[in-house]
Length: 172
Image (cartoon, rainbow, N blue to C red; front, side):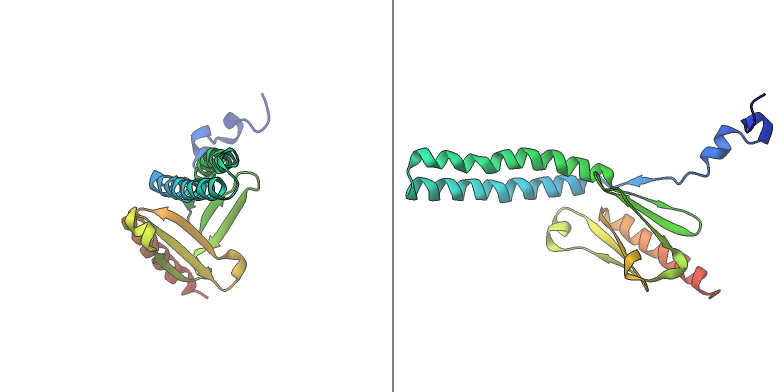
């Protein structure tokens, strides 16, 4: 029999899987907002550049104004990849935040080290029904943000993290 198999240790595969954090992905509203902003800004840039080049250099040069549209197509794909890379997990002692496509970054914020948890929502985020949770700790390296959450989820997360932070810091 193989050493370390589930039969030898008495641990089933399901019990081992329970040690893994349960990741929560960001809602699709954040992706919609970012893609709409990309289309609006690059669309305005394309139109403005086309008019300017057509007026100053002639209609043939105005075709160069279509270059931002190629950038828009590339940005559309990159925004989707970036959005899919964001996730967070609440564990017993800390919060994990993972993000990044090329350079993967995972931030671990211990509940007992949290000094401030706030929910923010700018005008564009409010229009799309989104909010962000910002976590502040004594060490700036572990400050973290979870963008694009539903406001009710952001408030629930803020309240839970605050409650866990107070419980963990009471023993310090």
